Image (cartoon, rainbow, N blue to C red; front, top):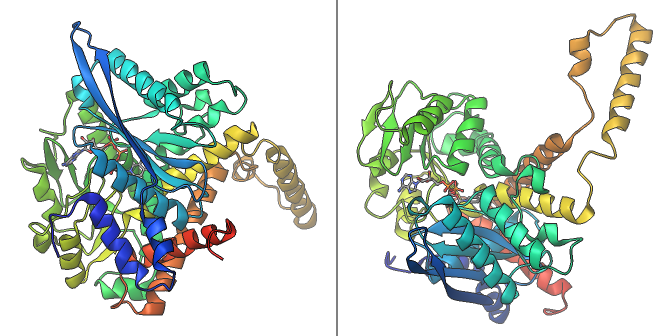
Length: 471
Ligand code: NAD
């Protein structure tokens, strides 16, 4: 298969492969696949040194079958129209897979954030938001951005403030963007959500004995060796929850090189070292690999690309030794690489499913903002008093006295508990649906990516039917 397809063409190729297993009319399939709106705009900014620079920004709204549309905002030199449209399409399929009632969108600004000061980034983000407002590309019921590669809760706070300043709907305006800081109407657990969701997904995928047997591994995450490419928001949090699940992180790759220790790396120490020195180079207790791409070929059980698209290619796929590829990044595997890896019997857990934790918790944040009440607020005390009543009843019936420590193990569910439980439930259910589709058609006939696309197509087609567009 051709490697020189554009990113959006590759997404559509995966769609077409899956569509063959459905019976929807071609016109409906075309409508699902096409990108509804996309907008490229430019604006000038004054740099700190007084020079003027033209900035290029994009926002694409792939599908309006559900509103609002939803998707991250990316700052990277690689941003272009095709990339943003492809990522917006992936958002449509991702939202469908995890039953989040949004259409897909994505935005981006073509820049390397390391080359701009904090105040320049603020001016750029505010002006980008102003452009979105002018073009009706943002709003709680229209299109809701979130963090992605190269952006964080800081940018989301600037977007919110700019939107609030200009909005006439002050009540619901706080739902115009998600991934906000907690103190600015964000939600507990959003920053961690994508990485945490990746680990919930891997845990579920590794729990099936027969699936693991197929790839020559024992079930369960404990003891499995992992290599991570990209140690940003998603990579760092995936590492954190993988370590909690007792997987062993043996390799971490960043832009300037990779580190490797077959005995295991302490992800927290690596993060602190990078914080202090600005890079992972010279990290003690590890071998340094000058070319970070070599890390993709390291001996390990699970490889997690968590940086950018097109990282696993026809060139390096034949050398990849991992048995499981967990696509935390969007589009990390080219079509040819996918083919090679499948032929070698690797299990690829696709991006449309595996990194959906971010949008799932963004959905919770949006709901919280629109309802104007924190999750857990109504029920927490009631649940606590119910548990305490149960403790007292057991004590009375048995004569056993619970210690303070034992009593503290139960408490009413707060926002963090509810968000994590909702996220875990979502990731488990979505994987089970994909797996069932795969088993129904036969493992050798349908891979996980195709099964995920089949499921997404069914769900989106059902939404169109509910809209009455497709009787
Ligand atoms: P980020 O900017 O926080 O981190 C990305 C990291 O990857 C950076 O540390 C960067 O230096 C590193 N990197 C870039 N190129 C690399 C390379 N060639 N080799 C090794 N490291 C490299 O971004 P993020 O939010 O963690 O996003 C990572 C991926 O996950 C993207 O594909 C994004 O679309 C996807 N994603 C993110 C979210 C989210 O909630 N942030 C949600 C879903 C999907």
